[in-house]
Image (tube, rainbow, N blue to C red; front, side, top):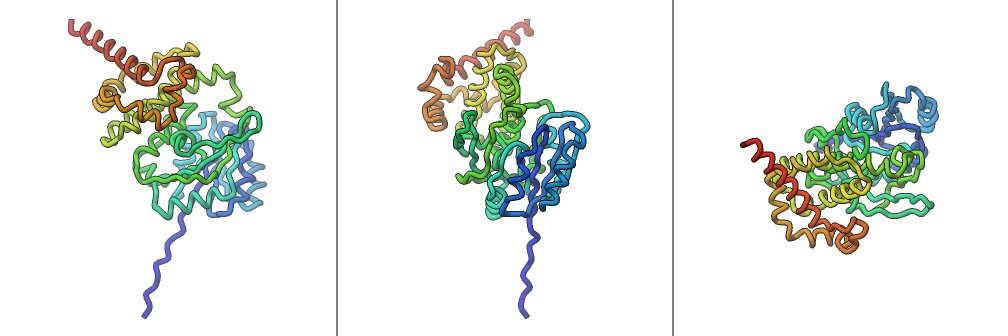
Length: 338
């Protein structure tokens, strides 16, 4: 008698699309080579504005569920709503004004299933303001944007990887910082699977540059420090390389904010907490290998092009900032003892 082969249940993919005054990604999803996915569109306080669009693309073969939040809550909470309501094995987030390459679902779904990864990332192209496409490095940007990424939902839920409700910008940076660094079971491909469109009406481009810099810098630093504190507690093997990568981005945003005269009181309080963490203090003390790490991560651009970074190199900034924090903490401790 021949043994019956076990028939594996096909894995399911959810594509989550927060919609707010945009809906351009649906035509590209019709053209996907792998049709094994469902879409959840979540409108951020815009009522039934997109129901007609849903009907049009449902007729074209897309399986779409439509959710509408009563009030505008920002892209992070919209994505959280999609994640909370998903029953799929894997989830991909797409922005409503971007374009997915035809093989995006096929490649991401195939690779994450084949290797049983927790997270898998492709490459993407960013459309410049002058119409030129600029290739973005997967390796350098893998912990920032959602573009061309797929996540195992069980991994996200088991590790309580969720969006911070207080972040209305740079919520993707916080989420991906945790998703990428809380597992070693992950992969990347150099294949371009996503086009980041230059939409002048998007929430990151429809405000003046100074206002966006302020909002982005403070939101980014807040999310990165909160995330780094969690990583330091949960990943005892977090490498100096990983910490330096994270701190380089905090450094860049911090100096940008200072250049725009942003009030950094809230972020300084968080950085003060970070500076008291034993693992982080060891990183500061043993910073002799920063130079090699910075060179590898940034090709020397930060240390050799000081003008861009306001003439204060990373190693000087980090040691000065946290020395000031330590000094201030010491003064407060002495004062309370007296």
